[in-house]
Length: 336
Ligand SMILES: [Zn+2]
Ligand SMILES: [Zn+2]
Image (tube, rainbow, N blue to C red; front, top):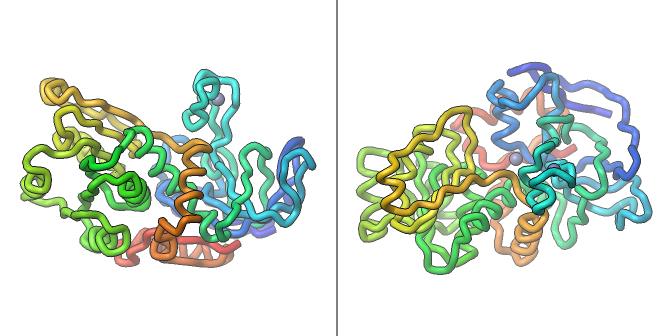
């Protein structure tokens, strides 16, 4: 079967590999679509701290079942999505139902080989039927679930003012689910094309460009009170530190981004607001369900989000171009 391997930072190669053997309790699948995400771009550029090369990337996938145990509830031909965070089920986090931050987490395409290949075998508990959605849509569940998880963490409610800093796919996902909860949503980003996309395709209430007067604009949008919930999805430490100032008194600050560095803030500023600071990592089965429901109801602009498409064999040549800002990529899907 054809597989695309990230040999070392900057080097992608297509090669023939043997079909995976289906292990005990696993589901053997033929991969259908793989979404390319910021994590993959970081792996390619050598900025993913948890990764050993060579690696087959790809953790956002839909597939068709080839073979599964009868008690898995899956049969050959079923369209499925995969929760790519393989959790252990017995650590302190898993015992609390927080499988998203399992101590022993193994993420497909990061800790072990992922989906940029033709066949994949994964334990059945991470494979779910993609009922009522297309295989394209099913491959887009994961990044949307990360946004849904962050919004759930912050418990965003109707009428609240929400600011999302960073208008990449994850930030966009947070905007979508904050809006679905009835919040007023503002986004802040450096890129004009992304701000425009958020206004025209996601229906955010205002889009502010990072610049000398951005604080004044955010203040005027909120009568000087700023935001009940601020989300950071920038992957930029300076932006993460700056975001504390955009939280209203009594508000919450949720960091979706992870960076290798120290987050710092002024304690008097943090305290006077009684700021709630949250990290948000991955997503749980409940978040995937939230996304599926919204998708089935037609409330996710998934066709607009899917800006690029390529075949598996085209990945080694086409992938580096996704890094060019001029390409205005939101979500690229690979057809396997
Ligand atoms: Zn992803
Ligand atoms: Zn665990």
